[in-house]
Structures are given as C-alpha cells and as structure tokens.
Image 1 (tube, rainbow, N blue to C red):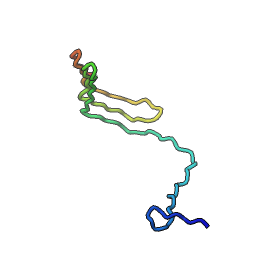
Image 2: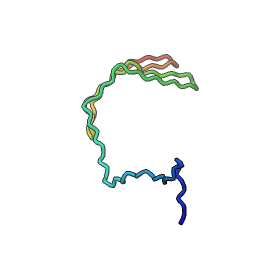
Image 3: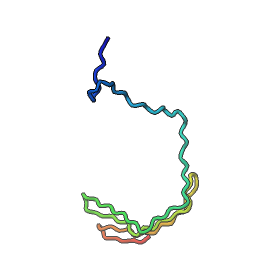
Image 4: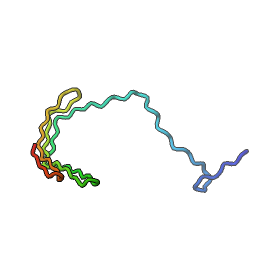
Length: 93
C-alpha cells in the first residue's frame, strides 16, 4: 500500500479541493433598460492634450432627459459652456 503524504499543515490530513458551484445552464435573460429620467447639474469635464498644450473645457453642464427606454427616442435638454485655450474661445450652448 502507498502512503498518503502529509497535508501542508503537517498533521497528516489530506487537503481537499474546494467544492465548485454547479454550472448554470439556463439561458440568460437580457437586461431591459427602463429609466424614468436622468438629471446632471453643474458638472464639468476638462481634457488637456499634453503634447500640444491645448485644453478643452465643458462647464456648467445642465443635462436632463425624459424616460430612457429600449426602442424609444429620448427627450434631451442640454446647456453648457464650451471653452478652449488655443485659440481662446468660450461659447454657451
């Protein structure tokens, strides 16, 4: 007969592999997107191109939507200030 090697803890017990969860063979249900509305207030996004030194800003972002549902158009309202440093430009949408 062959001897059982001691476990890593040195107590002679064999280490057992953890049990694996059974595979789920059921088909996945797609996620349905259904959002009543979305509001973003006073947000800012800044992008800097390090190679050229140009900087682009979108500030004072006010974004609101109506219902967001799969297969439907989305009513959207957006106000913001757009700016860049080369050339210096600042525009309100």
